Image (cartoon, rainbow, N blue to C red; front, side, top):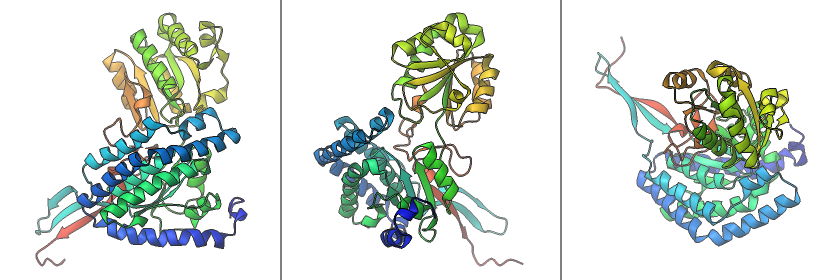
Length: 429
């Protein structure tokens, strides 16, 4: 048992968590056979409820923000936590986009017939009960709940204590949608306690109920989940994302992409954390890109050549190449062409998202093929590392795993499959 779990006796936590697990298993059975029409009706009603409850959601979020500020949370965490009218509307719109997605459940991924006449189909089915553990971002409550519902999975949500009020207000809207559509309200449950012992119980004490855990948060949370979970995990480590500016890039495009990749939203996992510049274009590209970042309010920590480009650049340490800042800070280094960039990313990267800026198609293809990350881009910002931007609706997160799901985890990634075999009396000799 962890030190956190000792704060509350396991039996007491179990009294809270066990009923959630049992209800989720029952709900999962109903969802597995729910029609697309039913699931979409629940989602549409939930989106309406979120819009109708905007004032209540923002009031709850204001209380969360006040508490977070008193706890001196970082600017990046405060940005993740904050809701406004635009972000509430984005939550509702994301749910409506999920409605428009094809229902993966029951779809036939492959089919064939054997010489003996057996007809075999590989059919998509739900995973079952998903446990989702997340920090800060209250919109994950809506995104995760909606994605799990569309993919026929029951879900137990455990949000961070800093977003507890916001998450409760949003969850009430999801529950209202389920009720309106006649689906079990236990299809989407929110852990009702902020006691961190509940996390440990989800990881190791609910193997009879939870089929897979999806963590979404900082590196320490992800590492703890992977270390303690007794069920499969779909997760990612930190988003140490890179932008590589090649010798054959357009300098104006390089500036635009670097600025957007770093500064559009610094607190998301797709934000660029390292800038790599080809040594062959130091004289033409390095200073303009670095100066644009500095002028935009970004701290640049660079190697010796980057420091020479602008006196405002601070020296980079070895740790900087590994760091996910989630802030207005970027590490910058000069590398020996595309192979130097590939080598740097392989050593320091987290296999999340990397971008190359170049007009040379052959160089771009070399980068795209040889960089082993979940998402690789050519002439585009790393901030496109997002399920919504991929046309997948919302996402639960970006998986850097190689098993089961990789990249944005959307509706299709929350399914498994079974084999359906139809015969006409065949027996095996």
